[in-house]
Amino acid sequence: MMNTAFRAWLAAAFSLSLVLGAAAQEKSNATVDAIFADLARPGSPGCALAVARGGKILYEKGYGLANLEENVPITPRTVFDIGSTSKQFAAASILLLEKQGQLSVNDDIRKYLPEIPDYGHKITILNLLNHTSGLRDYLALFEMAGINVDNVTTDNDALAVIARQKSLNFAPGSQWLYSNSGFFLLSIIVERVSGKNLREFAAANIFTPLGMAQTTYRNTHTQLVANRGLAYDPPAKDHPERGFTLDVSYFEQTGDGAVHTSVEDLLKWDENFYSAKIGGKEFLAEMQEPAKLNDGKALHYAKGLVVDSYRGLPAVSHGGSWGGYRAQLLRFPQQHFSVVCLCNLANAGPGDRALKVADIFLKSEFKEAKSKEKPDDDGAPPAKKPTLAVSADTLAQYTGDYASDELAATYTLAIESGKLVLRSIRPGNGFIQKKVQTELRPTGKEEFLADDLEATFTFERDTSGNVKGFSLSAERSSGIAFQKK
Image 1: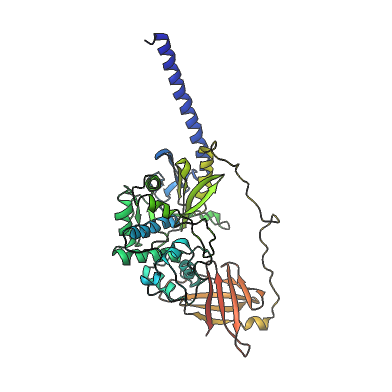
Image 2: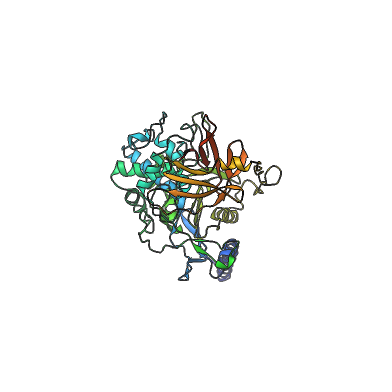
């Protein structure tokens, strides 16, 4: 039998181990809290954080305010719009329909979406899932059409602008280019195949079975969401005295975004990648299978997920950005370890913060040192195209109204203070016009750059030498045709 002295020593040793363990945990928590210290200041929006390993939450906390007007703090149960982090749920819905035998990812999308033009190339559902479709990004098209984010836009509006496009960015499968159009179209396919909209289908087949009671697709701008935090932009640099400003969207489309959830609920979904409760092992393998181009080149993008590595360890992730909301779900599958960071401040940077949290918890398990950020080759930002000298008479030739059938919008170009400017964009269909007043800099033969819009205008002339129109290219959408009125 154990003597009294030994029992006392053992009890003391056990107590000491508990104290030391608690002290180590407290130090670790304090190190994590320091990552979010800038958001914990009074009156600031912030982030919710949850860290899990082996299906158990190691640490969770809220930093900052969910609602500045009501002084409501963020908690691990605060609900955020997770933007593009939503894409994996649209992908999962499609794969579940495939598992049910209702479609194949190799199907031509025109089987379900006859509105989409025949571009002379087969576009498959798999192309949509992998961002290899070549379809122009409908959010970029909305932007170029001058549609203010304060508008209410619907599935019909998004489908119409995609269907009006007369060409692709590239042949399907030949390149990779992130396109919200593809994932929005997945939501339409889900509805047409299942008879349920994506909100209803995901609730029945994913959210409810996993106990994600705080998760929903917000597909109407009047829909109330319990415990939702509002989203904000930081104070403007030129007017810091104005403070934070509200930045929420009234767009009603789903698929490319629109999931509202909490960090705790996202961990329930994350755990399904180990338990396979929803879909099974084959479904999960297909979700995380990296895309390939037509030439066999493997990509780091799977189906709504980025499959890559960090510091020598395999990592699966996806960020999100919409309005003032920002999101990151980061998983290290070999360690059964995940970090979820959801924020309601546009410059919160949850991706970087999630990696810093992982650096703390997985410090001894990483196989590579943390790399330093690499500057450009010359240590400076990329060179800006120089402005060319163009005579006043030549600049005047570009002025006037230009209309695009693809955007259902009209641009007005004018001369102000000796410079060619885009004076206005007038969208059709009664949308609120986005304010615009930006210079077009001549940078090449018949080429002008709108630096504020990150857009290139390439003008065309008729056989008589008169300007007849231009081609507009911006991020994720190129070659939009405009004709001079």
